[in-house]
Length: 329
Image (cartoon, rainbow, N blue to C red):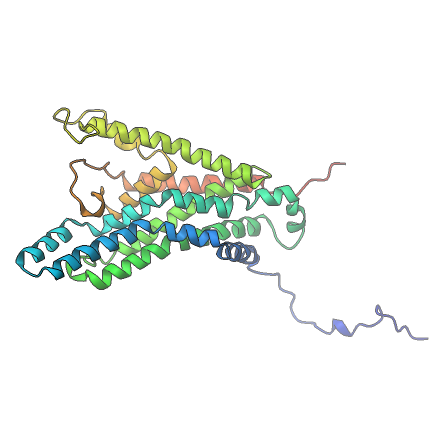
């Protein structure tokens, strides 16, 4: 009597083509992270808030332009052109990037604090790494799941302001440097990479996303407090009081060291990276005159090297911590 059971039915084995290993496994994990980020209303709220400097700058430009048009005459046009002449366009992107640092931190915590920590808590690594998915796929997917939404958040406001300036103020030197925006894109990529690497590395050390987020926020604010002390020291070294009056002539020798210590924080490093790549020391916000000289830009190559080293360190910490749960015999 012939077997008629399911085991004897071999019709489903008709495929005899090549058996290729699954590819782009990291993208499955990354795509899940990106989808979860884009579905969060808080992510888009933080993205909108990070554009506040660009929005205020566009409002200031619009107001001055309307004021010049409502009172036509040589004096009004000369005043508007003098105002535009004080504006360094690449510095406006520097200010927009710098003033959004706290919001970038919030987004990094929102996206990456629990990326690996929550998997550690739920023991999901035992299941994930038992599938055709190794540590490289898992780490690359988690990292890209934080990096891509963070880069999108940084890029969207900058792109809107760039298009506004290119369409409205091309005759006033907005597009004089064709390599400016590619350089700024490099700044955004490196900034998103630093935050993504550090928050992923910190997340891998914990089994609760809240603890990982609190730890990364603590690192950020402690180093930021040091940066604020350096700002005060810089103003003192330049000979200025709080009221703006000069205390003494000349420059203190301490300023030579302060302008380097200023960048020894997460946000300070990213601002210094933006200054170094764009090739600017900065200028007053909104084109308004100010007697205070900003902190000079750090040297380019060492600053980029430090940023890359932080990325490598964060990824290396995560790599060492990602492992399946071991069975104790």
